[in-house]
Amino acid sequence: MPPNFQRFLPLILIAALAIFVLPTVLKKHKSGPTASTKATQAIDAMNLIDKGEQSYKAAHTRFTPHLTDLLTTSARLASDLAIGLSVQLDVSTDGQTFLARVSSDNLSLVRARSESKVTVQSCRILKSGSGVKCPAPTR
Image (cartoon, rainbow, N blue to C red):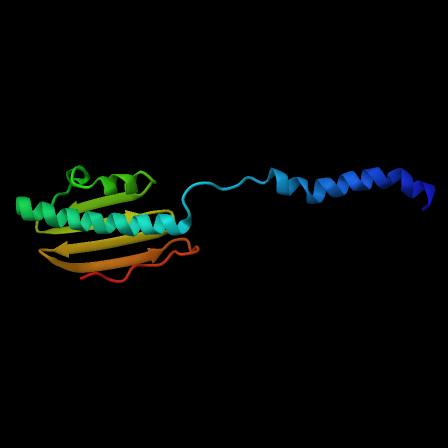
């Protein structure tokens, strides 16, 4: 080996180490729920809201516009909402129709029910990921 190359060999090895090994070691690992888990929890929350509204209507003859009325009957709904789901409820003035919208980072669901029939159901994938898919329509 030429003497000039031997002098720069330690610097070349340090540069190679910095380029290839350090990014792997210092890489931040993502923690928290996966995209699939968030999508599943959004779907689960929509189903729990729908069932909660139906049971509330059976007891009070009208749907409720307040999410707190539904949280008292379902602890699972509270845990689903804790991951950061956005929920909007709207009930008609006569209380016989409701619209629910549940959104997560990667999925947005809308369901409307009049009396006991689902009148509108929509699902939109906002950000695709592994295991993120829209649910089959409910009746």
